[in-house]
Every structure is written in structure tokens, then in C-alpha cells.
View 1 (tube, helix red, strand yellow):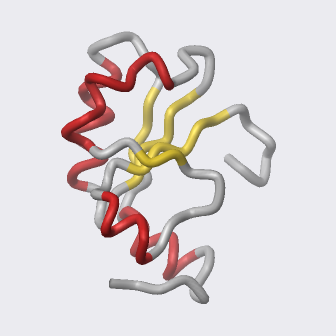
View 2 (view 1 turned 180 degrees about the horizontal axis):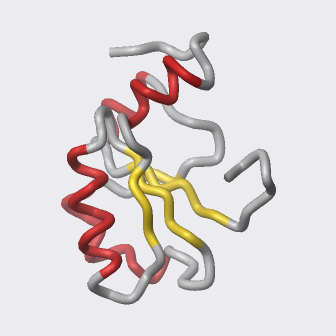
Length: 93
């Protein structure tokens, strides 16, 4: 999606300590437990791509956003899959 220039927002729903270890450039940190309080920080006209470590927390976030009429998808496999498939120079944890 990034390579195609699609208008997306990368939203990392991990905890701040995890985000300090490794993050995808351009992602916005909104921990899952704070997502309800930060909806005003999301652009409803963009597809929200949710990220966590392996994809479980981001799947919960996707469902939450879809129920609120956002277009949202899960980064399957989370940041660990991103590291393996896209940027192996990043730190896995």
C-alpha cells in the first residue's frame, strides 16, 4: 500500500516501551487501551492500518474502528512480519 502511494495512516497499538524498541517509520503510536480517547487524531478519510507485535491487538483495534465507520485493516503478522518480509534491519523482540 505504501509502495502504491495509497492514502493510509499507520497506527501502532503497542505499548510505549515496545514502540521504543522498534517502530515502522511514519507510524503513529496510540496504545490499544487509549484508542477510544484518540479517535479525533485519526483521519476518517484515510485507511487505518493497525500494527502490533504479532497481529492480535491490532485485530481488536481494527474491529473497534470498523464499528465506528473507519476503514481499517490489520497488518497481518504485526511488526514481526514487517521485519521478516520488509525491513530485516529492524530489531525484533
